[in-house]
Length: 266
Length: 361
Image (tube, rainbow over all chains, first blue to last red; front, side):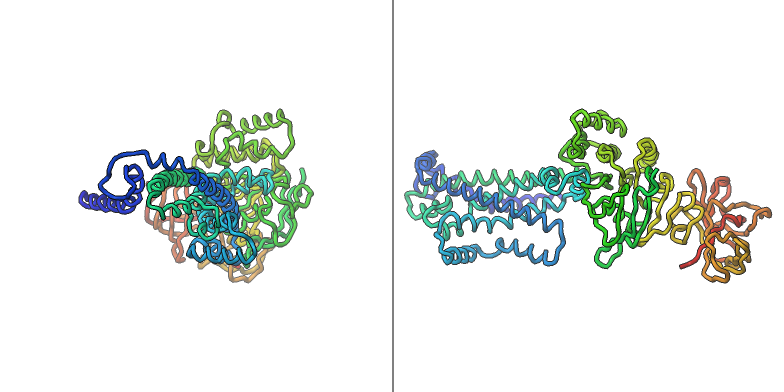
């Protein structure tokens, strides 16, 4: 038994090294006192971070990404909540087909989604910009948000809603006083993950954004100039840390929901 | 008292092709403790949910206190429900759960507080106001569910197997308590259960249901002593069935040939016609007597042998094979236990008045 546990441990360690070492190179080189990503390391510095801090286009791009991310995650979560509620509560003709249809944008190659959107958008006579990017992100985030919310709502005891109706509340009051507070961990998790997905998204933004770059696009633009690489490393390192934090938070919220759910049962 | 407080008029509820409730009519009296009893899938819960407004009938009308509620949603009905799993709101504490249903009643703050206080003392939950559902035991949750429904002072309280999740001892206590509570507040209770003991020990009247229909509606002792059909006889308590056929009628009695035991003159309460071949005689285990000697002062006393016994404390069950018929009967006795009277030869005695004659359908 001892032997077996050890080999599993070794496997696990190698697995995590394989997953995370490449990612960790970014923060590592962001503190390296050199303009090139190469060994040996030449010394510790905050220079790249200071450099990044002084560049206003970084903040402009950040603000663009935040705006798009917030709107996309809120709209996606609202749409996903309504869809998740319908799919968990009602079994209607075509419910499985429409469930698959909502999930589909998640599986279609993004580039195809992007090309289709650009064709439609331009043929309708609109200009490229942040509006089509946001619409694309809503399309892309909704399946993720719905999967999160469906798993939250599925374990939900429907007699709680009936009890609320029984105690005099109408459907609207029941949603706000009973369902919504109980879905809340799932809703917050959906908002956070929706935001992260939009924030990190590159292809749709690249095709649809026109002249207003999002943060990933800004980084991509900078990569063409070797001198500008270090501050992108610094930016990337910050994004990795922030994303990890948000994902962990969302995951914790989702589990919080699940743990509470167990207590609801008798 | 209003004899027709709740009127269920030819109610049917179909789910696709399944007739969950099939043309049922019932009248429930004001202040009555009324039970719907039956095996799972018999339609009892559907009928209760129709009363609550969680389902709407396919056909028929529903009146409560003279008002047609058939099309009203649950929040407009004068009913409240105690759910099987209690459905205590987990995100708010006990007192807020109880106040939940008061908001729409338009009471003053003082009236609200008074009602909450009253109902908390009624269900003995003082001191638990700040607790949450996950900090309560099963019995306490049940009381919260009860309090939350009663605080609205409904005309009818609907209870969906509320004792099912409790352990035996607590269930027995709650049965008595619930019965006393109902008597003292006088609200009409409609109680759904699959537990026949629970139904007959608590209720004023019981409707036994099967396959969406009412099999028998009567007082508990009637159900037990005078079942209308084989289903009710089998479902309520333990019984033995012996096959037979009817012969000649004698007023309200009839001659019955039971198995190969001979002809007996038995009460014909259900007015079964003469010369019917598919007859079943139902005899309760406790109505028969087991003894070592033949009992000549009983109507029937048959030689038998004990196959197996089981001891229950207050009584012992004997599984005996009667000579000449290929069937094991269950006889219960408080007189003998399985130590003093184990295996071997015995006599089983039956009084004719304890034979309930039923028709096979």
